[in-house]
Length: 95
Image 1 (cartoon, rainbow, N blue to C red):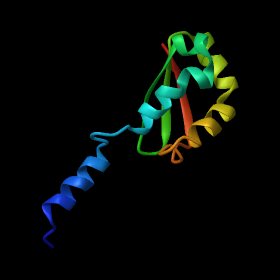
Image 2 (cartoon, one colour; image 1 turned 45 degrees about the vertical axis):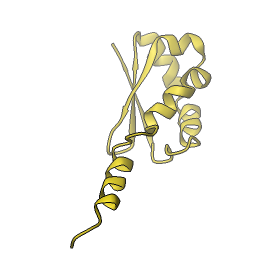
Image 3 (spheres, helix red, strand yellow; image 1 turned 45 degrees about the horizontal axis):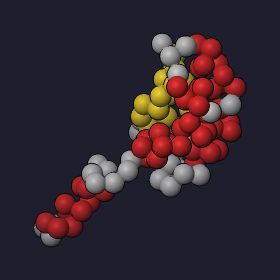
Image 4 (cartoon, rainbow, N blue to C red; image 1 turned 90 degrees about the vertical axis):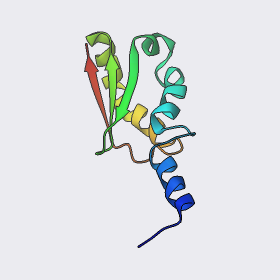
C-alpha cells in the first residue's frame, strides 16, 4: 500500500535515532554517575544489540570485574532511563 512520504520519513527518523538521542547516548550521559568517575574513566558504553544486550568495554580486567560485581544495580538504573527499558543484560568485555 502507498503511504504518505512525511509519515515514512518520520518513521525512519525515529527508527534510526536521527535528530534525537539514542538509548546508548542516554546511558553515556549518566555513565559516570552510575559507575563513579574512576570507573567511568576506564570504561565505555559501546552499543545495544538487537537482543537487548548492552556491551560495555573496560580498559582493564580489574575494572571489568568491578563493574561485574555491580551488574544488577547497573542494569536496574539503566532500565529506568527513558528508552532503555528493553536492555535486559550487560556484557562486559575487558581489553
